[in-house]
Length: 266
Ligand SMILES: NC(=O)c1ccc[n+]([C@@H]2O[C@H](COP(=O)([O-])OP(=O)(O)OC[C@H]3O[C@@H](n4cnc5c(N)ncnc54)[C@H](OP(=O)(O)O)[C@@H]3O)[C@@H](O)[C@H]2O)c1
Image (cartoon, rainbow, N blue to C red; front, top):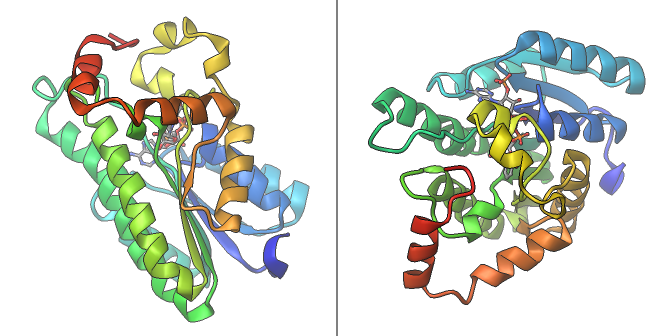
């Protein structure tokens, strides 16, 4: 286990019913952390909790919640308090990408997207910090994306949302490092998960070259190592690192043209 931690430390993982979140849950349970798993699909969470409890002997709690509901972050933390769980690790992972353009989307759909990936991420972070500060130890991983480094996709909020997560994670890491709390923006590229099924872009995603893809476990290994080393940004995988650096020198005007003309999922 990392940093001499005790088995009573608990990790709250959002979006633990699939993909990167489920992989984080497996990884942290194997390191001896207790878990609080959150997502909408309760049966998936319960199956994972049974698996990890048996495999690693750690306490695993599940709480089914829709994080696009503004009440959800407070409800999750109330559940943690009722069960005496101190949240030492927060993996803000739950997310999705809408494929409907801004003007065609309904306001409730757009508001839900912002609530899930901006407000809930920020509110959960704000709610766990006092306890972490008091214990002078905390790890927060916020799932951003390689998209935060790339030109915005026409009509989509996703790149803007993930840019916010990248930016706020760095700001919080600067503020909280002296309190023993590390905050890392984890910025994966294309990762095998249910993400493109939920987005309705599975066929287009499957046509992308395999060199662009990573397995969730590889993303999690690198992200978890990064937060423990105190790195505020983690772009996992060699190809993703090259791509994130490649966009940096491109002038904004050229990025705009790129974003308007190139969309692998259109
Ligand atoms: N896969 C990629 O290529 C990729 C690349 C860069 C960044 N990311 C980011 O990585 C994170 C995880 O994505 P993934 O690839 O693992 O996708 P995934 O396999 O589709 O998993 C998404 C998770 O988020 C949960 N979730 C979605 N909407 C939710 C809601 N309203 N309330 C609560 N939970 C919700 C889902 O659970 P339920 O459906 O059970 O609620 C699921 O557990 C996301 O933030 C995504 O933006 C993914």
